[in-house]
Image (cartoon, rainbow, N blue to C red; front, side, top):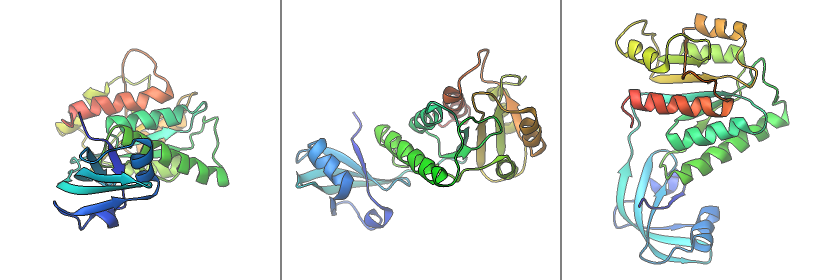
Length: 256
């Protein structure tokens, strides 16, 4: 069974080596010592949220502070491609469900998108609060999945900004029910060198809102180099399309 995970800042963990001692306080320390009630001798992982994992043994847990001894330091390398889920804002917390599940499945970054047909609107203070809520959602999901890295939550983008994101990607997929080629088919053709776009090592998946992606948005994204891709025979909710694509891409790219 994998060890429970708790997070500390990179500045706190970077200099630690096997044999070092470390005290985890704050909310994470209280959770470990008071809620989980970890006992001396139990194994635990302390991570920095950016890929560094310290495999530790508990030496004491009291007063809201977890004291550990570092047994092993593991720097978990990221894959050659960063998987980015661009999730349209959706009602009923379906967008949050999407990023939560995608985090558990291994997404590297999520980007909130104010789509043309999004019913939910982030304006002014709501945009700030919404992004904080997304950060909390992915952090909790990463902890549940016992990940060493917490996905980044990007700034809210509109369609124009999303076009620029697509232009800079190695591959961009528009998950669309009217697509002809499957996600696997598009990825295999891309890997074989057919219509391979230039760009950084980023693979972007675009998921629309409840009302779907408008024809104008699809056209703009295709002009920027994106490909429409089909997930399967059935129409998926906004909350499930992204995670389904993460599964398929992880399999095709050998991440799993």
